[in-house]
Amino acid sequence: MTAGSPPTTDAAELRVGDRTLSLPVVRGTEGDDALDISRLRAESGLITLDPGFGNTGAATSAITFLDGEAGVLRYRGYPIEQLAEHSTFLEVAYLLVYGDLPTQEQLNSFVTEVTHHTLIREEMRNFFDSFPTDAHPMAVLASGVVGMSTFYPDSQNIFDADAVEVTINRLIAKVPTLAAWSFKKAVGQPYVYPRNDLGYAPNLLHMMFAVPSEDYEVDPAVAEALDLLLILHADHEQNASTSTVRLVGSTHANLYASISAGISALWGPLHGGANEAVINTLEQIVADGGNLQKWVDKAKDPNDSFRLAGFGHRVYKNFDPRATIIKRAADRVLAATGADDDLFEVAQRLEEVALNDEYFVGRKLYPNVDFYSGLIYRAIGFPKNMYTNCFAIGRLPGWIAQWKEMMSSPETKIGRPRQVYVGTGSRDYVAIEQR
Image 1 (cartoon, rainbow, N blue to C red):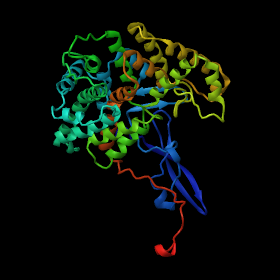
Image 2: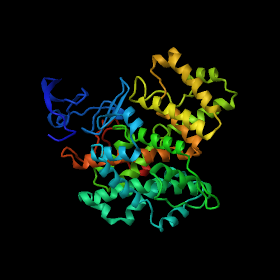
Image 3: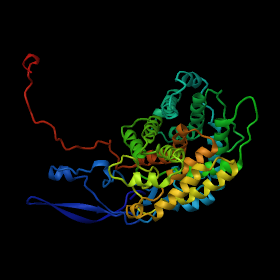
Image 4: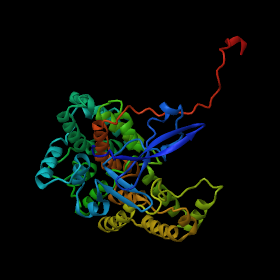
């Protein structure tokens, strides 16, 4: 038995007409058990129907455990609270990709390899120059990632362990450079090359905000907060973008193409774009004079389309453990940057309402990680359309780990969901003059 493949020790019975089918029960490590329906159609002619896949497990995995009822998140068994307090993003990236926390020697080697690959090919300048100035940075980033595969033919060797390892190092190293250049393109500033004497988060900040005409000093408190954000975003089980990476990867597309697809999925306002939506909401409230009750009432009105972004989660039905960590980080960043805290004040008042209002409490609409992450990105100086780019950098090692696990699993098949057809039945073609 391999990691990520829990034992099957029991079975459930399903009665269909006069037939009784036996469905194996797969036991998860933490009690997250499942019915194995992989033989259901072959033995009964039936499929399951599960819009949004909220009750469907597409894979067994040994990477991330998430308990939405208890508010638990662990990477490879380690609680997110401990990793956020003691670890660095590149150490967490190593943990996710390779399965264990590294020794000091392993971490040093990994950091050196990643740092060695931060430059992108000079021809990519023409690629960025070809986009209009108002191109959304997520579109540029997704295009840049898949475009990089053309420079590295070895990335097509998806079953060559050495080629895969080099691709992994290149992606973790180069995606921040691509993200920073997409930002520079959007604001009309010269591209800034990476500095390998800086750490991962400081280097990203330098590439984003430095200009040739003056020195840029990275604030350690800001770099620490950004590194923390990347850790908190590093993986989150089988969400929409991760499922997309796995689905595309199941076709044996290369890792660049799979990650590019994940970036595109993350772009959506219901997924990675939610932190941008939170800032838009807070700005609306501030512009309206801070009349919080008015907007709370609008959110509670079933006939009003307005919704308060940043509350509730598809999986967490208690609290988002990342939100507690990130709120403390928001305090530190705002103090370090001296940023305008009008939005932060409104956010704190809004959180207080949500934690005490029966409408929110009864529906378990607690603040999630997006509620405070946008405030941190804003305080650092990122424009709203860059928030999701930063999210993508953080989620990158999780996507890579999920792709790597899927490619090594004997259970993997090409992803091909079924459907229940509800359209028109068979009918004959009618000539156009008779319609």
